[in-house]
Length: 149
Ligand SMILES: Cc1cc2nc3c(=O)[nH]c(=O)nc-3n(C[C@H](O)[C@H](O)[C@H](O)COP(=O)(O)O)c2cc1C
Image (cartoon, rainbow, N blue to C red; front, side, top):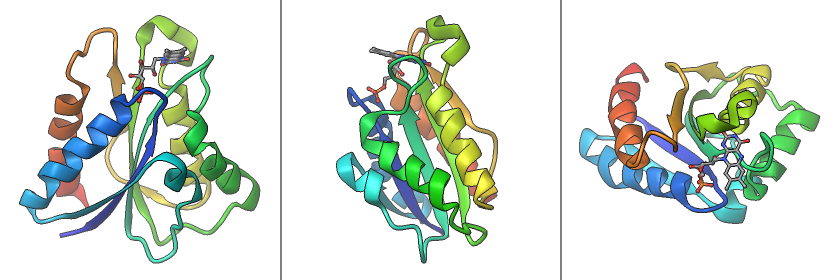
């Protein structure tokens, strides 16, 4: 059973809703869940962690939500050794943005990989255009994802 830190990047709350739904439901499967949201997501410490789940939307033209930018900048510039860390990514986006669909989730995925963290499972990409219940899709994915930890 794992201690999972969910790092939320959001502008209008959908990613937060997904994270909260996982925090409400994954403990029943025996996992401890903490959520780093708002400014805490940007300044979160990763030392001593085992499992991180990045849950982020994309805004602007393929950009990260403001609250998670400091974390991305830290990973990009400091390149900490995260080889002790397993991670997964839930990316929220909208396919009508075509070229930048889920770009922030893709960028966070690449940054964790570049820092040596081990990816677990495939990235989930949730399309706001076709999915009215992103939290349900996230939970269905996460229930499978935790079995791979
Ligand atoms: C101004 C604006 C820009 C957006 N830009 C993108 C984008 O470039 N790529 C993408 O996949 N989705 C984009 N989206 C869609 C959001 O990522 C999607 O609605 C998501 O569910 C929002 O999640 P949040 O409430 O956690 O921020 C954009 C949405 C808005 C309102």
